[in-house]
Image (cartoon, rainbow, N blue to C red; front, top):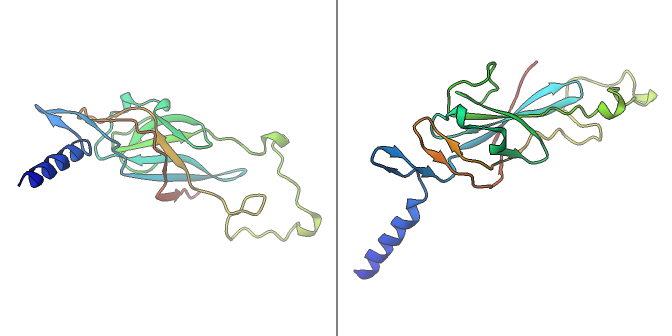
Length: 179
């Protein structure tokens, strides 16, 4: 009997940190609340790139509590963080919703060449086809993945705080915008 009671107490303590803690009607601190990570890709003059990452949380997020320092994306610079009601870049600053949209700074890879595309060999000119898999200049497929890390606290509208956990999360879906 003592073993069962001790096991139940240990299980209760382990689960206490797994979810949002509520007491006296006020929200508490939750461990990471990230439910999903979706990359959003756009086509630019120098090819298709991930332009934003949509992070889904369980509850509506307080946009005023967010800053660009609350998230990092491996190999990229975060330019802005806003909220939305779906995994999409909002047309306005923020839309009330449970998605945090991490916008990424665009870097034109041809800026180092004064914006000029690399020349194609004469033998290949006129033979390039436009419908097919997307590839980088070196022949590798376009990488539409991203690893996002929550580095700051995120506050929900009801006061729940999703604590920073500094754990990189790869996207589990991608959206490619059509132009």
